[in-house]
Image 1 (cartoon, rainbow, N blue to C red):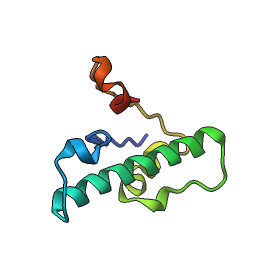
Image 2 (image 1 turned 90 degrees about the vertical axis):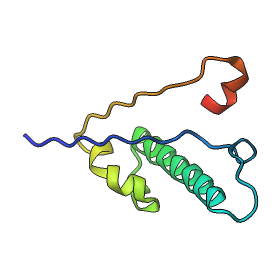
Image 3 (image 1 turned 120 degrees about the horizontal axis):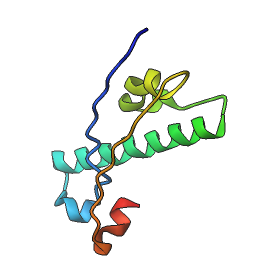
Image 4 (image 1 turned 45 degrees about the vertical axis):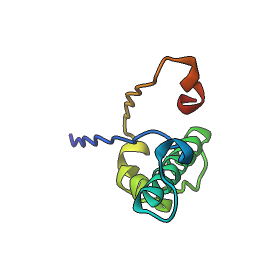
Length: 93
């Protein structure tokens, strides 16, 4: 029996206007990278659920690292912390 434990803080979907990332700074690039990784992770999970033959694991570092934990015979648990206020509904959706 072989097991792996990956603990990932995905930092949530960052809205550019709420992140304070303006201009060409490193915070802007980091925010865009987080959004890209989350979008690709979503595409991978959706592809696995639909039983697609081609899963885009190689499109981000995050999904490449998690490939063995997401596909095949693995069991994956996601713990999600969402703000319950209705004002933050679209951030959590």
